[in-house]
Every structure is written in C-alpha cells, then in structure tokens.
Image (cartoon, rainbow, N blue to C red; front, side):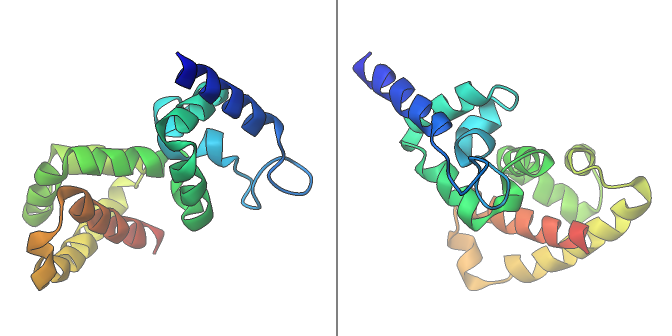
Length: 160
C-alpha cells in the first residue's frame, strides 16, 4: 500500500511538472510517462493510469528512455505491432519464411500497410531476416531480442 501511495504521488508530480520549456512535453511532443513505456501500452487512452503504471513498474525509467531514444515507438500502431511481434514471434518468423499467414496479416493490419504494398514489404523483411538469422550470434539471442530485430527490419521496410 505504501508503494502504491508513493507511486501515485510521484505520478501526480510527474504529470504536473513540465518536461520542457513551454508545453510540459518532451521536445518530440510526447509526455514519456503517459505516451511511452509499459503504462502507455496498457492504458493507451487513460493518461493518469499510464503514468501511475510507469511509475509503479520502474519509476518511469523505461518510459523516459523510450521517449529519448526511440520516439517513434512511443505511441500508436508501432507499440502495438512491437508487442504483437514479441508475443507471436515464432509464428511470425515461420510465416515470413513462407511469405504469408494470419499473423503476418494481423501485423500488417496493425501498421495499416496497404494490400498493394504487403507482398513487397514481406519480401524485403524476408530478405533482411535471412541475413540476420544467418549471423552466428542469432542462435543465442533471446526471443525478445529476435523480436526486436524483426521489428526493426519491418519498420525499416514499411518506412521505405
């Protein structure tokens, strides 16, 4: 209970304290405690709950780090896609090797990739992943690390 009260107090202070000069948001336009981190993934539309969750989880460290290092992953479809890839990595990598499948379709739906571009995106990700999977250190990587590599290849090929 004491930890919860402390977290609520810290979250309240975080929401009230400005992060940058004028608007209370980071230079990217994001408030890391409400738009980034685990809290934003769980409480997408409830900013106070997102902030409290981030503070309870790790005092907001992950949220602030993600805001500073990878702003494009703090909100919206990218976060959902990253979570989906991590949760479904084995299915996604298998379907990528084949070239299609339900998990790939769902993943591309999350990113709103047009039907016309899907085959090209998957072909490019497939080529990138073939190179990544053949690296000696890939076999020792955790599933989370492998999912991150896949996510990075996907985002690079959807942005192109």
